[in-house]
Image (cartoon, rainbow over the protein chains, first blue to last red):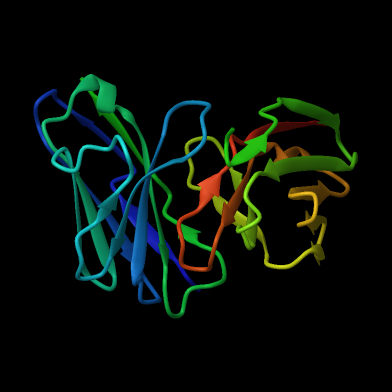
Length: 116
Length: 111
């Protein structure tokens, strides 16, 4: 139980375009979702926290207008990287917690974004 | 000072060895402690979740928490090459609060 599905697993896009990443909780209600970014050989850095039906809370230094987060339902959150640039290339991972979830947090499998 | 410190390694051990991974944290308000395993280009997988001081065992894994010293450990017995991965400690103030991750320790178990 407590499965989080993240799509796509890999995406390559041109500089200046937007990319949407989806994170779905398959068998529990995700009242809270977290979005992380991970650069090679580095740890996970929290970008934002979103509660269902509310605006996301962004960590210091994360541009909310660039990284748009929507958490409109208890099973789906999306991260849209707008006007992507090569420096946005990274590994993006979501995690979810909520009623029916196991202790701790369940992570998606991650999305590798490459901006060319 | 970082909120959680973890030696990045890499740590290289022979197959069958006992592995000890450690993290220290700075704020006594942290109450929840987790260990994750992350294979290359994959999402983290929860290994252990603990709340109180003491030991928690699950198969070959033992998590240890010492709140008085603000020190957490993960022990892996009879290590296998398939255990080769990056191990991340994570801490949180409550069960719905954001996680703060250590930098991760890369472990290599040699056959």
